Length: 329
Length: 79
Image (cartoon, rainbow over all chains, first blue to last red; front, side):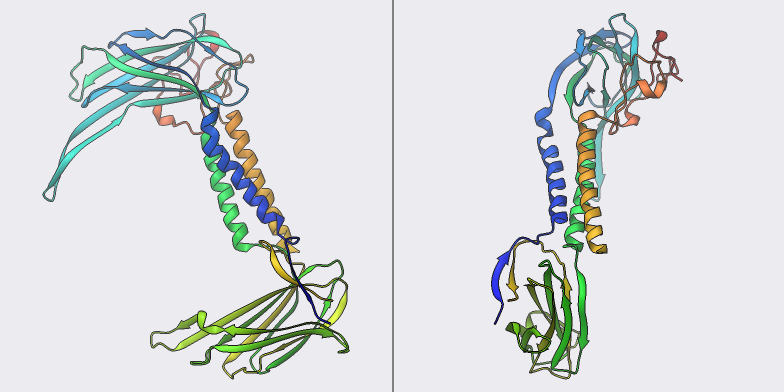
C-alpha cells in the first residue's frame, strides 16, 4: 500500500489571511478616502492691515461621519511677513473660536562651492479640524493684524487669504492603521504559518539510516516532515534520500518516496573558497486519516562523514497556501 | 499550541488596528466638538484634530485664550 497524492487548501492558516484582510481594509480607506471628501467652500479674500473681512455665513453641518477641515493660506509675495486671525462666529456674532497665525515667506540666493541658485521658503497655512453638534450658520471672519516686509516696513496693500472648507475623513488615523496592520502582516508572514506540535526531532551525523517512532493523532491533522541535510564536504553536492513510513510491526507500508537532494544551490564558502556549509531541505506534507503508531525510516545511502541529517515531524501544522499532500492509506 | 495562540493574537491585533483606524477616520475621534449643549469646558468643547499641528495656531494674546479654547461671551472662558 502507498500514499495517495493530492493537493489541499484545507489547512491554510486563517490567522495569516485575517491579517491580510485587515491590511487591505485599511489600504482601501487610504486609497478611497478621498472619494468621501466634499468641498463646501473655496474662496479668496483680500484684507487690509488692521481691517476685517467677513465671509458669507456658511451652514456648518452636523455630520454623520468625518469632520470639517478649515484651511487658510496667505498668498503673499516673497520677503513679507503676515499675521492673520481667523474667527468663527455664530448667528449672534459670538466668537466660537479664534486663533492667530504668524506667517512668512522669504527667498534669496545661495552660493556654495562654486554653485549657486535661489531658495524660497514659506510657512503661511493654518489648518483647523472641527465638528459641530448642531447645524447652524457660522461666519468666518478674517482679521489682518500685521503685514510687513521682512525689515518691518508696513505694507499698505491688501493681503490675499485663501479659505477652504471641506469635509473629509481623518486620514491620519488611516495612515497609523496602515502602519500598524502592515507591521502585523509582515510579522504574521515572517512567523507564520502558526500551529504544530513537534512529534519527532532528531539529529544524526553517523547513521545513514534513521528509524524513528511517532504516534499520529486522529482527526486528520496535517503533518509536516522536514528533512534537512547539511554538509561541509568540498565536492559532493548530491545525495539520495529515501523516506518510508510503515506500521511498527512492519506489515504495512503507508508511504515511501525517494528524493534527490541538490546541495549545490545553497552553499556558503569562506574567503578561501572552502565550503563551510551546503544545505538542502525536503518538506513533505502528510495526512493520517486515523490515529496510529508508525515507524519513520529515513535513509541517506551516500551519507558522508561530513554530513548531518536533521529530521523533524510536526503535527497539526498550517500552510500559507495550497500544498501538495500525501494521504497515508 | 502557543504558536496558534500567537497567530490568533496577531490576527486579532490586526483586525483591531483596522477597525480602530476606520472608526477614528470616520468619527474624527481625536477632534473635539466646536459647540456643545453641556457646560463649556475648554478641552471638551473645542476642536482640535489628532493630526492637527498645534504650532500652526497660536494663542490669542487679546483674550489669553489658549489654543483650542473659546473666546468671548458666555460661550467659554478659556484659560
